[in-house]
Image 1 (cartoon, one colour):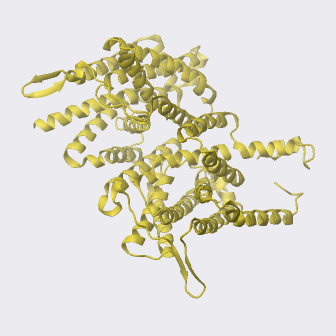
Image 2 (cartoon, one colour):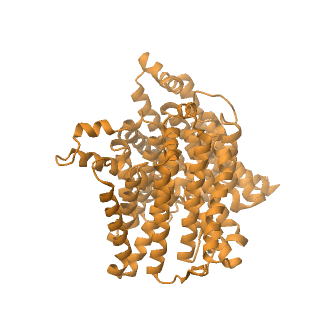
Image 3 (cartoon, rainbow over the protein chains, first blue to last red):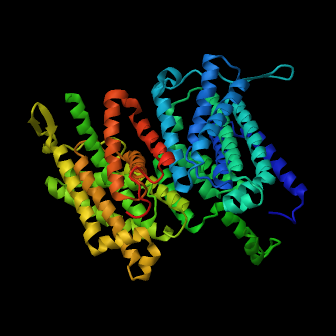
Length: 335
Length: 289
């Protein structure tokens, strides 16, 4: 966005935002609000990881809740059955999800377009059925309960027993920062450009020495790794994992966040996550009404505003008389 | 043997319901090249229309079924005009997202209007048990099977014999060429949606007395219809109908003999296997309905 803006302004803004995020729970003091912030953080991380797959390499996967859920179950089972400490369980959750993604990527990447979407959807449905029915492992519809509260121990440095909502918030914030850093590093690097080239024109990408399959697999596995890690966090936060956590509802919300916020645009995805998880909870709009409104918004945006809220905002900002570039410049900037 | 025959019958009933949803889905995909994520939700709308006509307004059963079919016919046409037409020339992922949006709106509006409690519609036919050779069977199931098979035969004749039906077949093969030779592609597209939804209304009227209806039933049906459509080969109406019956029978037999908890998983696994191993479907042609 900014050749004119100095990098210092950008860094200062980020720092201010970070300080605001750290100070937030001290100001809010309401457990409910902090809980919503945690949920928003989880959805932001999930949406960013989903965007790596959908927005950057252009694979409309509908399997994301499966990876989130597998991560959550793996971490919960490790923590309850084997007494694995938090950090190990957390990493385990992410790795199991990533491993599963790698495994299913072999058959699914043979499918193109709509078949890929429907195939991954079938996979997500099967995973939910497995969670519901393999009772010895997951507890089935009665849920897997009693996941211990996380205790972070890195021997000489840190011994932190997370128990209050505020502490969970800081743990979430740390996780989110890692995810944001990872995603922005990935998408602005050579790898990110390779992702985009695969999305835009596979043949051309191949001609310039980019192996599409490799980058698709990479994005898919990293996306699942993040989703699984968020799942592992979720298991330790709610202390219960249920088969309903793997439901398609999550896909729906993620699709809404991405396509309304702006697919393939980090700022848009973050904006979308805030608008579609924090605001409705904050205003306490009934879930059913919320979904009706989202559905209508989704229909309207996909037809009239394919670049989402972020795309629209960027255009509007550039058209303002005081912003350095003219409207004409903005037109030229579009891809 | 007794239970085996009963499971087969359950499978056929289930298959008939899936077939009505899948046939419409396949027709729409064939003619308009659109994957309709809201198709199951439209079935749900049809079921509630039937519920209103039969249980609330107290119309006689055959009239209520007809009302459901006619209302859904109009609904399908309207859906095509308002939601599908603006996106028809856009890429497939836009279709998927837009119809997913429509599905969310339909399901949640139904929750707002009718609540989440399932509704049960009972007809005297469902209570009438026919018995022959020690084998029991409700009249409602017989009606369901006979009427759906007749309507599929009617659909088949329509596609093969009438000018409009032939235009649909032609459009499923080459849309541009159809426009060139003067077929009104927009009218055909609207009619395709109207007919598919009319079929859903009819099916809803026949099936509702057998299963409870609830606002979120649509998504599951959409997925089952996808599975049937994929098994039959994308966009082939006959294939989708066979696929739906195979799916229904497999589910019923799996529920009876393997594990009822995993019957849905088996259905989706079959779908994925067909996608991977025989992407052209079990019965093989590549283009056309």
